[in-house]
Image 1 (cartoon, rainbow, N blue to C red):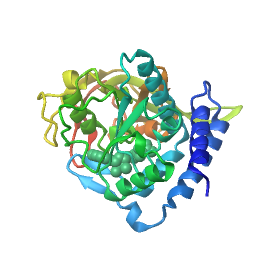
Image 2 (cartoon, rainbow, N blue to C red):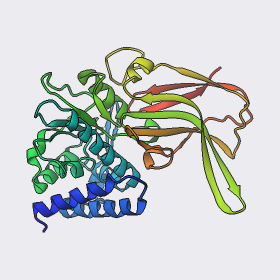
Image 3 (cartoon, protein in one colour):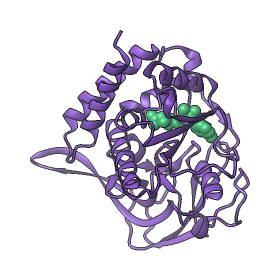
Length: 341
Ligand SMILES: C[S@@+](CC[C@H](N)C(=O)[O-])C[C@H]1O[C@@H](n2cnc3c(N)ncnc32)[C@H](O)[C@@H]1O
């Protein structure tokens, strides 16, 4: 078994790979494999065990089981861009801080590994960074506490809460500098990213630095194209911006001010399209782009989180039409789309 120093060294080195500029996919993959092995050595989580594959249903979305949450690590671009974004945010806040208070990160939805934060913690002292862990799934929560103990990271812990981040009310005294949450699927489908964001923004204010800073949804088209010298590929073209999760969501999209629950209603947004040619080869899609932090964007199709979602609307033969878009928080949140009559 490796010593705590060796474990920290490995996490530190993984972090150094992730924060490199450029798109060195091969070295990111090697770092992710090394990270997975380290987590396996520490926890030995049985990914095949049925219990670990059980999702938890809530009235504001699905919380995925420990197996699926652990496997998010495999989404190389996602993991690399989030870790890099968190590093840059911490670095920026440390440079700006006026007292010796550590930067306090609230990590909502840690999964069993707290994947996005460990390389960051391994790179800073407990005087520089503290973390509050929040996880709804009791098994994932136990696992992440175990990981922190094994790594000797208890000193970084401000708090650890097994609660629902869409509802939990924090004490008024608590100061949070950064919230990290990756509880989303492409098109902001199914999971709790939107209600978590809104609940925390309500409590900590509009200036709260939330990572990811923005999730942008556009309506667009997907089109197979081919040329004689390359194999066929699919092109995606955005036609219109339709929804964003960011500081301005409450102002621009939410109908009634402050209460965030399954009954929270979002504005219906109508968009006119003209001269379109949807067909069996040209399909309507929702495109997702994520601004993790500042220049760190996850663009369309670079990660599982930004895979285009094919819209199940028959637009074949319609040239000019209007679509209505409305986000909905429910037990399976999603962006609803309908043809305007
Ligand atoms: C997509 S996984 C991400 C895991 C890990 N943070 C990562 O990025 O690799 C989301 C995690 O958030 C947890 N989660 C989902 N909804 C939650 C909620 N409302 N409150 C607290 N945790 C939640 C899930 O149980 C799951 O462990």
